[in-house]
Amino acid sequence: AAWAGSMRARLAAATLVVFGLGVLTLQVIVYEGTAILTDNHSRRASARARGASAVTELSNGVQLRTLHQSGPASTTIDIVLLSEAYTAATPFFADASRATRHYFSSDEATFYGISPLLNVHALYLPSAVGRIGWGAPAGTTFGCYRAVNEPLRAIFQANFTLLHAQRACRHHLGCSGCDFLVLLVNEPLYGGLAADGVTMITNSLTSGGPSA
Image 1: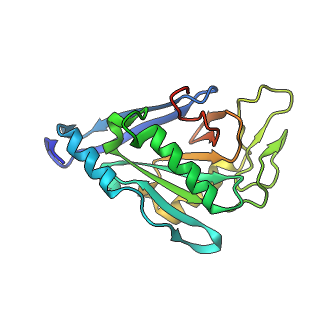
Image 2: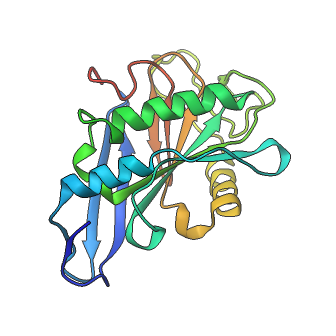
């Protein structure tokens, strides 16, 4: 892949937001140097050729898989999908793979144009129950829940959600691999929420699809 300018260039900041209707927006800011991607096609092909990695078995039932690999953490933005309300790894990795294709990897993906700048990892942490709470956390890994008497769109986090997600990601991937955290919630109804430091999306078939 060809980069114009110095390889000193680093990606210094980015913002990942999901609005109430589930629209995913990624804004990338590049600092230090004149890093310009001049050969997008070859780098995209290279990223897709590396493709998804094998599942790595970690401790206590935790599993890790890289779904989209573009380069080292020092020159890319690392997005981590963490499982919420999944009691088995196989459906989580299937849903995470679909979301990655719809948002980043396929030719018609929302952010295909900047996919050569991104790595996407899926981190499975088993939940005790397979459904998020209604009005309060219900024993899932990250404590997400829907509010009572509210439209079925927003998904809220508990007071420990962000801290738990940050700790899990840093423990299993290291600080350099945890630029943006996204909780992939086992919830068939459309919805999500952008919160400080973490974003929630569901595994709804319309999340990330052309209609979103």
